[in-house]
Length: 148
Image 1 (tube, rainbow, N blue to C red):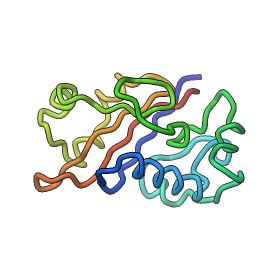
Image 2: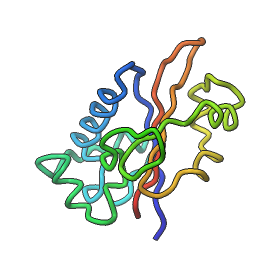
Image 3: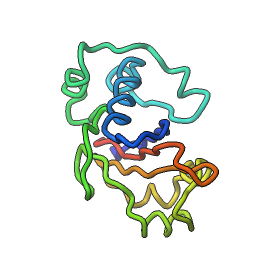
């Protein structure tokens, strides 16, 4: 079976680890991870409606319970790396951002059109970029593929 894409937009903050940790905590508390939900729907309004609640004591326990499939969510990503790596979020470099979006400051609508980006991310990996509104950072966009 192939990997399953996931994506998230969160409010921008300079401390990207804090942003990731808060996102992971939010998704864990909502129960939006495998094995609680086999296949998460990432489009609205279905995404927000999925909130069965966490069924494990910790994120670590949820990741362990998901086995080789992974959680099919951001819970599989615990930190950052400057290059693509398993279980880490890597930045889309400035050249790649310009190639994908035609600008150094992609907007929300641009990043939500995931076509070309999806072709360049491998299973078990995640990328992120800053999203802009009115010329200022407004959100962080995370995009990844599950292990399975």
